Image (cartoon, rainbow, N blue to C red; front, side, top):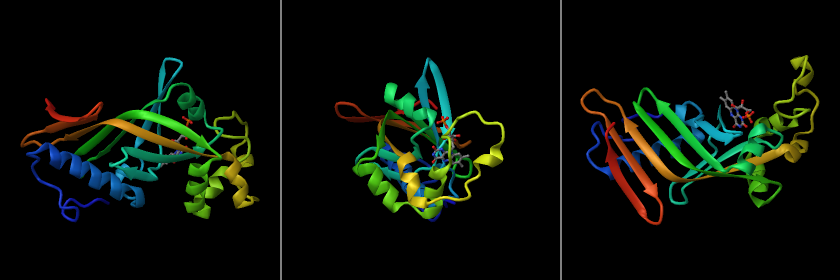
Length: 199
Ligand SMILES: Cc1cc2nc3c(=O)[nH]c(=O)nc-3n(C[C@H](O)[C@H](O)[C@H](O)COP(=O)(O)O)c2cc1C
């Protein structure tokens, strides 16, 4: 769990820099800490005029490169979504910290390239196992037990493995506190700009 004291997070946000620094601390820690709620943010795509959202594990965060990395099954529906319309939104909220972080950007799907190979090589056998499920994500089936992963060769899963790279151009920080809510947006368009918003 991300601890407010351990991360030295402010009780009151008085500068825009503090909001971005806090978002960076939270999201960086969330990559390795499965207990923080930001470890599993909601990732949304747009397809056929419909928004689809799903929880995904955050595998990498880099503010400098304005990048997040997610892993998925190459047969998943969202691959088609992002290949057609790359626009994406990522959001998370931690009630203990009282902080919501919302990012807007674009997702590119990678398959069997340097990025997927490096991500696969860094993955644990436990993570790799998911990609050995037969049939592929979202296929309609009658008996789920037939799809329990039993006999598998862990490296075989690589052929079903994809990496989603999210490049964000906007990060919104919302801190809900009865003494005074704080909402800030950071944007990287032609140049970096940030401002407070009415919460
Ligand atoms: C805690 C949790 C973590 C998840 N992590 C991932 C993940 O890292 N990658 C992924 O593709 N799906 C993950 N899922 C499953 C997705 O939420 C979703 O059900 C699945 O990917 C199918 O989505 P799609 O049909 O939109 O492609 C996770 C679900 C939960 C509840």
